[in-house]
Length: 79
Image (cartoon, rainbow, N blue to C red; front, side):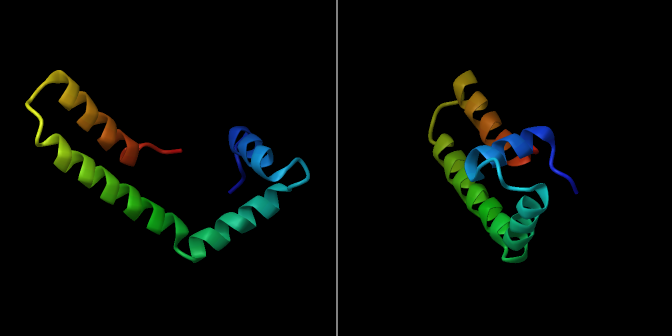
């Protein structure tokens, strides 16, 4: 899969202008092969679970509902 213009722009910001799309894709494949994305998702889930547990201690309110919604959104959004 090719990188979107936005993905390419971000990657070049971090890695420099001379990096090629195929090099970036290779790094992404290395990360995927080594489980980096899966571990990141698991860590994010653990953080959200902790946040949701902490929110249970607060009284019901629009603010609590908003924070719970944001926490859920973080895990469901697609980059």
